Amino acid sequence: MRYIPLLLLLIFLSACTKPAYDTSEKFKKGSVIFFHPDGTSLTNWHAMRMLKYGPDKLSNWDRLPNTAVYLGHTKNSLTSSSHGGATIHAYGVKVIRDSYGLDGTTEITAASGKKMSIMEEAMEEGLLTGLVNTGSVIEPGTGCFVASSEARRNYEEITEKIVKSGVDFMLSGGEEWMLPEGVQGRFSVGKRTDGENLIEWAKAEGYNVIYTRDELLAIDGSEEKVLGVFCEHNTFNDQTEEELLIENKPLYKEGTPTIAEMMDAALRFFDAKGRRFFLVAEEEATDNFANNNNAPGTIEALKRSDDAIKVARDYIGTNPLTMLIMAADSEAGGFEIMGLPKHLMDPEKELPLKMENGAPADGVDGPGSKPFIALPDNFGNELPFLISWSTLHDVSGAVLAKGAGLNSDLVKGTIDNTEIYKFMYATLFGNFPGKQKSTE
Image (cartoon, rainbow, N blue to C red; front, side, top):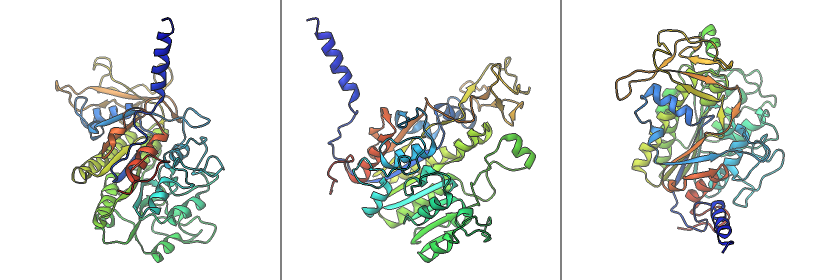
């Protein structure tokens, strides 16, 4: 009898190591929107809710019905990088931290058994594809789905692979890496040393090349393919509050579209084609502002991300055979909220530059400014809070995955970063990777 408790424990531990889903199950096939608000954690979404909705209200992120704790480690690091994390999302297998579409410098065999990313496999199956990013074209959150390189800094190589990937709908910044060195473009002078003009190449291949928000809003799906180029680098100015004030720069560059507008245009384009699609979209500013410890910029980028979630939710409302799945690969800056009663945090008084432990204390205009004021709670109170930062780098611990729509009930409990790929794969192809593809 003394062995029964041990046996029960072994059965319990065995159950805990199994996936919370049946890997032999067949799934209804549909379209997938993978949304990646880079660098975001649970705390980020709390702060955005407080400031933009109120502490007792719900954001679009809150309203997503399925939630899972996200485990984001790589093969050699407990905290992922943007390019390592994106590679894991694109291939469904662990890689080392310094990887851009490869495992370090080694070619990857994806979880499906093929030497291609999930987007490349979707293209092989005839699905429409899209990459949408508020950052430069070189950003790995989208780029790793169609490009690989031995170093993230190989901007010319990465840009060429992305533009020439065959993706139907591409939006980003990064004009500087699409034009030959010395050639003046719409926003910048080119930096390519190989003499190649990727803008002209795209036009010759049938892409409708657009540069402005107005041109994006006019997208109606009649276009064969679309390449949107909205600035020389990022659509935002990822600097500290102090630097932006001195240089008189806004958080986002004038005339550039929001991530919600980009996502809406992509969905209009796909909807008009009447075919299944795979869209990967990224708000990069949530990461870059946080890595500069710019709290106002981070919260603005979060609100823009939340607006994009509404676009996806509304689309699923009329197109239920669509999965929305979202996660960040890590947390940027170690962003934390401190909210105290008004007699301890006077809304009219400037905050100290730093907390007692030396951590920066950010208010509405950065360190040393007045605190943020949340919108009214259920009692009508408008309460103050500050943002405290722990680092300029990425950290781990409080990333959540979210899901809505088709097959999104897979997003539950605790999931590994490799499972983002598996859930998308099941929805695109009707089964988990490594199984016989559904023909239904």
